[in-house]
Amino acid sequence: MNYDYIHGIKIYTPSSRKQLIEFAFKEKKSLIAINAEKIVKTNNELKLFINNNIGYPDGIGAVWALNKSGSNNVAKIPGCELWLDILKMYEGKGKVYLIGGSDQVIKETVCKIYQDFPNVDIVGYRNGYFKSANEEVDLINEVWHAKPDIVFVAMGTPKQEKLIERLAAKHKALYQGLGGSYDVYTGRVKRAPNWMIKLRVEFLYRLLKEPTRAKRYFSLFKFIRLLFTNKLTSK
Image (cartoon, rainbow, N blue to C red; front, side):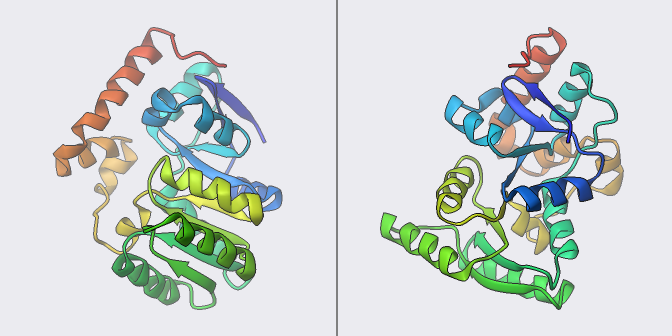
């Protein structure tokens, strides 16, 4: 599969979501959403983790950067849709484990998955909060015993990537970090209207709905400046 480096981050440019999913499933690696914020803020430790796994263009900023770098026909692949594509492709063909959110959110997520994917084989789930290091160790052991083929972790960056790295060290599977996707899936958080998604300005909707996110968008402005002054290095 083709890929390019943007600011030291390896980003794959699949021809389709299906190709990306099949590649990740075969390689038993982690799918990591790449957006403008991650491109400008990721430290070397997280870059190493991403580059050893499968970064994909989740945000429009990543798409812009890849196109400017010479990649052709790069598709934006929203992580909040990709994990549902994975469930659909492997419904009844693999075991699934879910981590993240509050107790209420994860339970609602599991219930909705069973409604939408009746043949799914969920072998375990738990919230994304750990009261002690021992709880995390217990989870890692539980995942190892359950032997899931697919593990979804929704805790936000960099917490979810750090947990995925520790989980994958003991049990190989297809992992995907989901951020706030459970909230979107259960309807607790509304996605932008379709017309905004098609125009690729979904980030503006999120900013208007959640003004507290404004601080995060300073990274976007920094990214745009780097992009248009050709200062987004490849390596």
